[in-house]
Image (cartoon, rainbow, N blue to C red; front, side, top):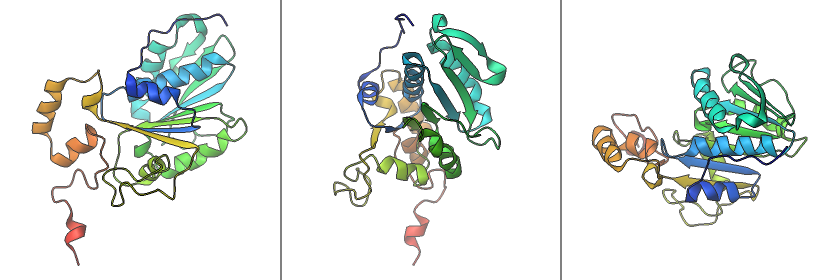
Length: 239
């Protein structure tokens, strides 16, 4: 396939994700900060550079339309042989296919040999969805990119910790070596305010409008337990 131009210029933290050679890259970032675009760029690159089967797996069926729109806007028309929104599928001229699936679909995660996987809003998934997908990466030693906003200290938080050589700020053992670190993983983090896509005025308005826990979770991508709770830290007060 001849060289094509993609109108995408990553900002500094997106660039770090793209430059990483880790097989499993985990991005935990604030809302509207470019994390989905990071995933779109990776999925498109995997599909365009060689014949490949690439899956984009969303948290649920309700958000599959956005994934379709983002991929459709990013993939250059000259590389797309056909596309079918009803099937959530793009077929490229080099033989690659890009398919959108849902993590909550009972039949959508059927066995397939993958060459690339984007796990969109993975913190909202059931862990069983990832466990079903993981074997599909084995044959071709395929990479996976996890992108999302945190949802407390669930299984996704543990995945993110695997990409940290030392425990991050906010962890009870911050700065100490992380015995669960896996060199195959690399984790990334950024706040909405750091992104060039953000609006500082809107962020400050949101800070005033939202409970502290919600703001920290959604805009600062902090791991906050019970962000939506009216009374927080209850468990720590119980003896």
